[in-house]
Length: 459
View 1 (cartoon, one colour):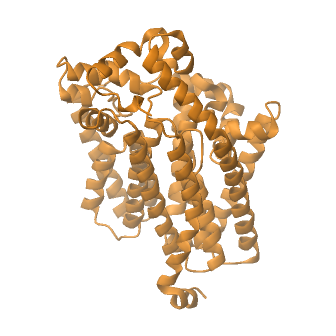
View 2 (cartoon, rainbow, N blue to C red):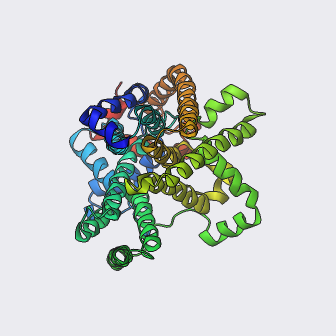
């Protein structure tokens, strides 16, 4: 049946990839509508501590570019490079960050759609349902789009997506090892924490696979060697960099072991948040039932994902692609890294922070890829219909809320813009932008206005 399906459709099956377009268009339209170009958080610190001192000649460009580097954590090299380019060439038109991030989101979604269609050679219905689940993961519509830096970080997600696709090619002996090692170095340098997590996952997968295939163990050793060389070079030239977080990893792990139920609550929350953001869900069920609703929503998402992966594994679809399990594991790894580093800052409901959603949504990307490649049976058809209906309903509810809320978001930014122009050192501004407390943003605004770099303040 698989041969007949593939031979009858051939390249025509790529047409079905367009099922992701409604999700992509809805998310892009919302994101562009609420884009203001006004910095909200860390951007102000980058201005005050890095960019302006560089423009004044107080620090070198290398010091500027590495000002957010932290060993074995974030680097923000691409973001700081774009900030410099934007202010030096385009008068600080910071909306560029959003446009670049959205372009990365579209490209990443396109790459994943192509992978799903290539693997989906058994059933048109299963392919369409798989693409629906994948699209809901790629283009989940959240509250984070007005935040410039968070949207830009879809660039790091794109780097991780491409790297995992190359890892899959190596697993199927379709990529030479030297090429994989070069891509590993590029991913570490350009992918920030997300890229580093993808590399960590690849090492773990290769170590496990190395039990049966020695070439995978060799790859794991060489990748670890690349990581050690880069870490040694960074440590020798830049040191350990800026500290990350208030609490150490050991303190956080001790707190989690003391509260194991919080770990489960956080896991369910991680599966719920990409489908319906906390604010959206609260508008539907109210504050009183919010946490219960999150747990139920997350449990359904977790259950459906597990069922699809089990069916995918039993049908031996790993011979076609390992991407479903790679992306589910990657989403879970990102959740684990976040909760074990930030638990003491936000508790079990740390995932309420919208900036984590794009990383958690990879579990649904993996589930969609698995669903697309399944052979149709009574059970898999039922799962496909239930899963695609579940994510589509969630996406529609989220989209309706975000579109209705957009005028309030625009009004908020108009108020911020007016305060930045009239009284950047006042208490009113600090009440809407926490980073500007105590007149922190006033010197930055004064300097930027004095040097004609205020495109983000223009309507």
